[in-house]
Length: 250
Ligand SMILES: Nc1ncnc2c1ncn2[C@@H]1O[C@H](COP(=O)(O)OP(=O)(O)O)[C@@H](O)[C@H]1O
Ligand SMILES: [Mg+2]
Image (cartoon, rainbow, N blue to C red):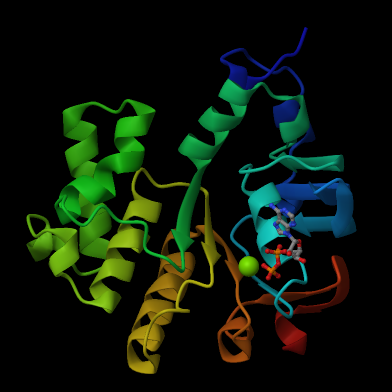
């Protein structure tokens, strides 16, 4: 029988094994996509550890496997072989419900496309992850207002999302990613659709949150300037890690 805190049962060993230096860990992680009967190795043998509180950039050319790696780290997909774990909990051993619970409680997401519901208010868009978690109305309102305050949009809670500018929409996405205080925020090309001034403001906000709240950040980007602002750069090529730089080397 599987023992897991995310399956609603207590794991006896995961807490003891967990080390903040490998909060997220992959071991020999590989992903092969099958399309029209043909296999494509999008990731090959990735061994990676992400430390709690780290701000890591995943860079590489289009098609190098960045989004695939992020999806696996974020428990949005499963590997073909190898393992990926959060705080010592191997995703591949969890049930689908367990994986959903892990993702909903521990992770926040910011994507290039906003994925907002334009007809809904800013508030409703932000509280969506809390509704999925089944939070009560008090907790939900408090956390949403905290998150909106963090991104400077407290006054806009009642506006329809469709009436916002691109930069404001991305701030709503960041607020939604932060609601309920996740441990890790995953961002895939978070500023890809924004003009340079707006991008800079959004980046400053993301980095400030990392410094002030200790949230672990994983940012997928092909923007070298954005990557240099992170304290670690992981470069992918053809599904493999080809270089790694830590803060003092960047
Ligand atoms: N669902 C899929 N089915 C088949 N091939 C895919 C799928 N998703 C991604 N790929 C392929 O895997 C490779 C890596 O993709 P991806 O991780 O999206 O790269 P990146 O984010 O670096 O641009 C690409 O060649 C892409 O075409
Ligand atoms: Mg991508």
